[in-house]
Image (cartoon, rainbow, N blue to C red; front, side, top):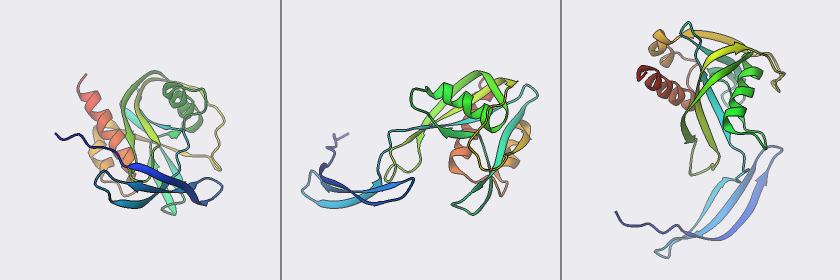
Length: 183
């Protein structure tokens, strides 16, 4: 396989910004001499976690919360940003406590994923959580999240559920099922 040489960044400038996001234009020069401008979300340096919690009874614990992007309530797994100074495991346990009122004695990293590498650099660590215990922390959600229990044995039905469409949640579920079946 031929070694590829990354393009040279000739210039990087913020072209738009909001309260939450900054869009950066990168002027790139490729090894063949071609020059192009690419736009991306400016890297924030913060990564995130998503957790697939499984109870001892074999239920997946999901949340239904409003998603402004789709303008509807979506079903997915607990998730959130890793706070400065936190590890992915610490963030995962905190998010579980904030979003579903449970902590986990066992957290297994499944995979680190990137949503859209052409536009985002932030990574999300997907984890499986087991040996759950009740503990609630105050979260930052604007309204209480609906907790939804879904039997692992009916995971195929979850995959075709109309409200379960987030690619990261689907990926996390499939990786968790693979991990669970390998034990």
